[in-house]
Length: 335
Image (cartoon, rainbow, N blue to C red; front, side):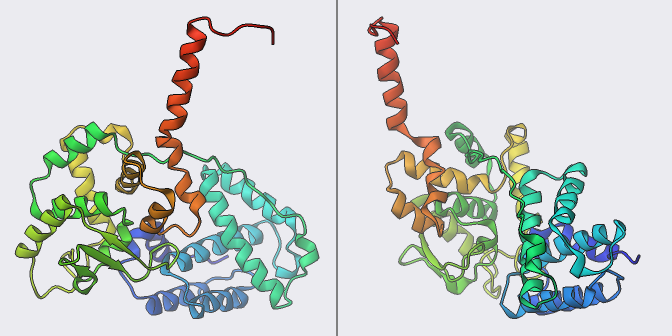
């Protein structure tokens, strides 16, 4: 069977880096071309599904995720001796999930891949290509609910103290003080910036397309003003690379460089930890969850509430109050 070419595998392997390389139109052309080269079962329906997602204005990372998930499933399905999409049943999905987990894929990644695959199967059901009754038993994966990893205050001060470059300081401080996602920051154009009102307009959120406004603290504003004096006026993007906008891998390298300089690289911090730190610090300072939800661009307040587990001072105070009574022998009676 013809496999997906290594050239396109390289493109989808670094989704965030690729997200700033090609317009969506050229991406869908790439995807359709790659599908046409294969001998995947039902590849004409696969092409139709991907074009449908493109027409529905799905984001590049969603197109790449769907392409990767469906192509891997169809390859697995074919290698298991099947070639007709109408024969897909729940057992095929379960076997695919086991195969992905055996390859070492994390449960969170497996669940994401399964969600993309379910979207493809729903498309096939709506097109009367497969029978919904064959897929009545839906697979549910239990995903660990991890605590967000914020940067400790002492490490934050150490990190900021090491940044002398004007552009790098502006980039990292804006992430830390606004809670923006890295993709949102890298996509910022000069027209999105309102220095006078100390605002940044995010017209379309990276993850859920929710537009919002974020604000600039004193130190972030100062760092931005210094950068604006130095940056090339002809550039469209606030932060730029050799081409146009700065790519994710370059921004990540900047962050990692300062982690190494401050000997913090072993603590598991990522550039996304700046967003977690922003949220945790504002909650510690007493900001209401409803306000923070708007700043973060969360469509569901439960997403924001996860951070409260890191910063719930009332729970901490209640624990030590109760433990003080216990340690003094203040508990009597039988249980």
